[in-house]
Image (cartoon, rainbow, N blue to C red):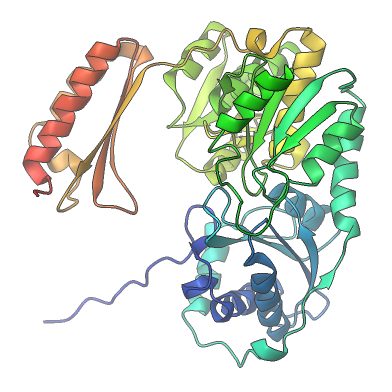
Length: 457
């Protein structure tokens, strides 16, 4: 009997490489190996290529930068560092200042003990699948000797943060005056802790910054877009006009209205789509959203005669659809919004916030008034522990029952059945206008999965 070849486990996830800092690919040796592989593929064998590195507020960031620089150097690629800088700032600088590639050291919204590596090409774009495959092939090979103990730190370029802030101010200052507006910004003790408040202040806002003092351990701890409780309270305390919650690496944001109520990515997409249509800046009267967007977004946009191109989860899929369809706006419920070619398809939490603030100023409406047309549809999510993961459509009667329930829900409801990518769980998500109905449907579908493949005990 001939044995089947073993397929290596993928190294890149949906958004780069992530792990516990100090382990596996996020150890110093692992990061150096990544630097060598990335430099070998994107450096094109040219000694003239220079890579730009940056990191968020984690303690492990600078040392991982140094290890990456060691590997890059072994591949003939020089490296410079922008230090603490948001991921979109790194992507923009890589593109605009002619770096050959960019590498961001960040695990985004993950806790401080994790870290990650995101790679960008010379255009500031995330890597295509084929390029990632070339890098992974090299990562399965033994690299040359990488002298980590003698590796110099990448040359620090302190002016780059200021270049990014000036870019934000220059781009938005022509169409946005925040004079008199009171804005609270929660920086998640992350990459945007300096640049975010600076940009808002220079645009005229009265800025109250919180979670803006990263100490290496406090990134995303009870703050930022994943924990907006403190932001809500601060907005109410200071009677602010709006609150902005960045995530750890600054590529997305959520908002809080003047009443302290959360405004998620779906509501942000609705506000921006409406404004862009009014300005004749919404090609085909369509936007891009992922399958995880709430049906409330679909209903609100339907009332505005705006359609949705639906894609899989992940901003890469959003960007691909924007380019393919020639559209200008897309994003995710998490607050990762992309303003198309006008922003070089770079998701930037501060750009998202400034775009909404422009509509807030021009409409002369409060934040709560801007989003009043958006109403979140009730949603039920049940996780079912499973002992195995056969195709869900193979479970007896499950697909038939799903179709029956979907027909009953109509266009304002939906059902998603899928497995977790990291745990032995089946996820049952049902969304619709009637809470009691979706609870009954979700529980019935979960029970059917439990009976077929549920993990006992």
